[in-house]
Image 1 (cartoon, rainbow, N blue to C red):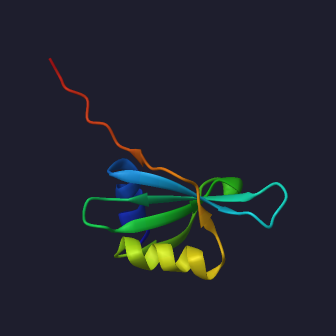
Image 2: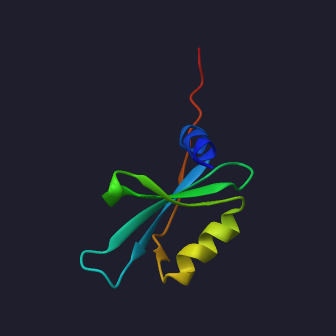
Image 3: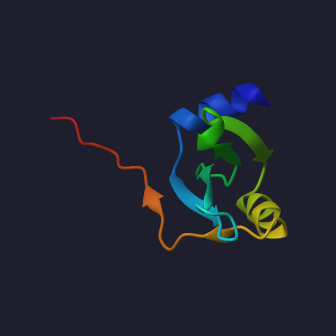
Amino acid sequence: MLSHAQNLADNWEFTELWIDPTASPPYVLILLSDSSGKSCIYDPSQNYQLVFNSNTYLEAKLWLLEDEYERVEGRLRASVSATP
């Protein structure tokens, strides 16, 4: 499981920020997902420790919603730079 998480951290397609708005300041988690939907959730306050790993984006999203996290609007997509 950890090896997939390390691979995903290098080969992600998009990332989302999720917050717990009831905390002050809001608690943030980072979701990374690859092109097949495999997703990992990291906790930046714990040195980016992996807190959840799933085979689908939907499973990761439901895990966050279950704990009442809210997605910050928008996604950051990985950019592929063209080589000359």
